[in-house]
Structure formats: structure tokens, C-alpha cells
Length: 269
Image (cartoon, rainbow, N blue to C red; front, side):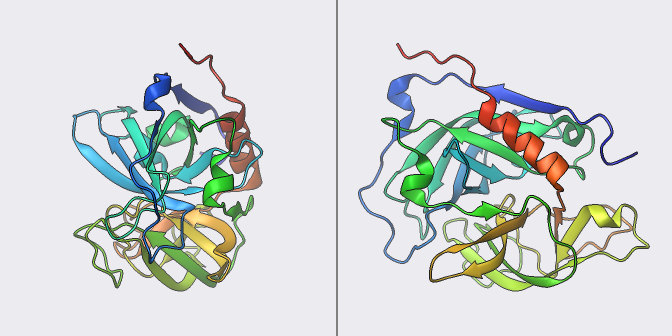
């Protein structure tokens, strides 16, 4: 199958009553959290269970968009959309940031992912926000590499792992954890090796969708997102570490454009 075959995006809209679109739950950021563009993503799976991922606000013209894993948006087992998304930008140490819970109302992924979870495992979420403001103005935002650079280079990865993984942190789903090391290309004897990148550490459940940041600057909390955490790939790929889809401008820019432009009518009454 060619990488560009049958590229069709899928989007979903959820109309949420105005009074439920923002839920400010606290007045201050956690004292030790300087990562308000990165946050905890809570949602309900088709079987009714609650699950968690990581999402990151990215810099866009729309200003209200975050990137996460497609498998956090679409349940590959039940073949349906997850629902009831709440994003907690700046969540850390059990404390939400000053914005509390922000509701998501549109979701965009590539349809190829719904047929094969190893393909295009990234997607975009658009949020309701208040008074004509942009979420990125209050949280900050990361730039994205529209073409993931090849080669091996230092990468900083964030996420909220719970009860799994190898990140050096509490791994309780309540703490924003960080790992820094090299991301790399896979050997050319593996199938479709150029479509994926890897890191040597298992970031754990809850870190799915977490950003892989190139040229991360902890002083400004800046850098370029060049991947997001997927998990393992099937054999013959090694069952260790974590992988990311290595997107190209053709797929990344088109899906982001669809996400920004997808504006179904909302009920404001």
C-alpha cells in the first residue's frame, strides 16, 4: 500500500450546551508546573469506561487546537469515536491548571487509522473557548514540524503515565513526566521503516499522544513537536521502547487544515 493511498480525513462534531463548555475548577496553576500547553486528556470509551491520554496545544491560526494520538480519539477495538473529552491544560501533581477543564467539540483523524492502527496515529482536537479568546493565548503553544526531520536527534517527551512504563517519575497518572534522549529511524530491513520513529523508553499508558519535542528549551517551554507517542508496533518491530508516526507535510498540513476549517453550526441557545 502506498503512503498516500485513499487519504480521507474523518471529523466528528459534538454540540455542547454553552453552560457546559468551560468548567473552571481552580484559581491557580500547580506551583511546580510550567507546562501549561501540555495537559491531561480525559474521555469515555465506547464501552463506558474512562480513559486518559496526553494532549498538547499547538500554534495555529484558529488558536484552539491540540494534537494527540488518533487512538485517543477513535477506539480501534469498538470501531467508534470516544466521547466526553475534557482537557486539563497544565495538569500536574493532581492539580488542574487555572483553566480547569476545557471541553472539546471537534475531532479530526485520517480514516486509514481506523483500518490499521499503525498508520497515521495522530489527530487534532478543537476546543470551545470563552469570550472570543484563543486557548493558546492563555496556555502557550508549541510549533510543529510539518515534515518530521530524518536522522537521530535529541528529543524531549512528556506524558502522564499510570501504572506502567519506564519514565523516572511517580507514574500514577497525576504527574506530568519528562524524558530526554535521542529519537531515531528504524533499520531499513523492517517493513515501512521510514513511516515510523522510535525512542528507547516505554513511556507507559496515559502518555499516549504526548509530544516528542525537538530543540526543547525549558526556559521558554518552546520547541517543535516532531512526533507523538503511539506505543509498540507489531512484529518484526521490537516490543520495547515507544514509536511515533513520522508524518510528512502532505498528510500533516491537510489534516490540520481540515481540523481548523471544520465548523458545524453550534447551538448557542
